[in-house]
Length: 109
Image 1 (spheres, rainbow, N blue to C red):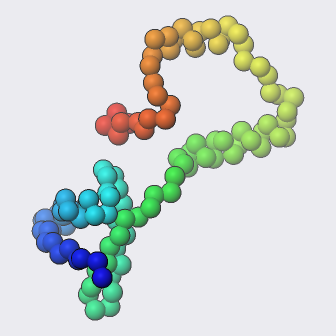
Image 2 (cartoon, rainbow, N blue to C red):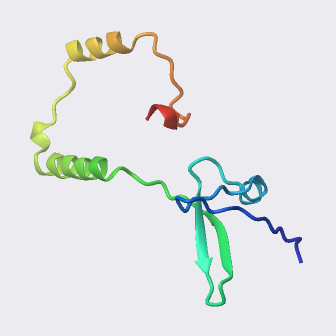
Image 3 (cartoon, rainbow, N blue to C red):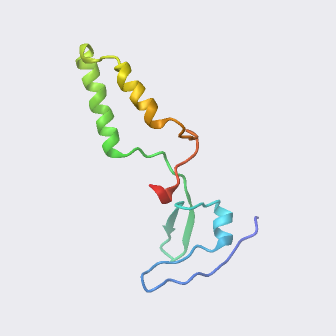
């Protein structure tokens, strides 16, 4: 049987607590990580890291669904991007460096 780990944390006046660093490491929790609690009838609480499914913004999801339906219903309305607009967009982002695979910094969201 694997070694167990017992730690204590305090609940604040606002019903918040800090997850001890040993628990965060054991569960491989990062910032904004989620914990699933299972409360047993005898008062025992089990917790585990909640695997986060990639959640799409509901507004973006509805907008993309709308676009998809419109494109299927009216393919004749689909037009190429105006080269003038494309040149303007390239001018606006000239020199901006980014890594498309790097997560956004939550502090800047």
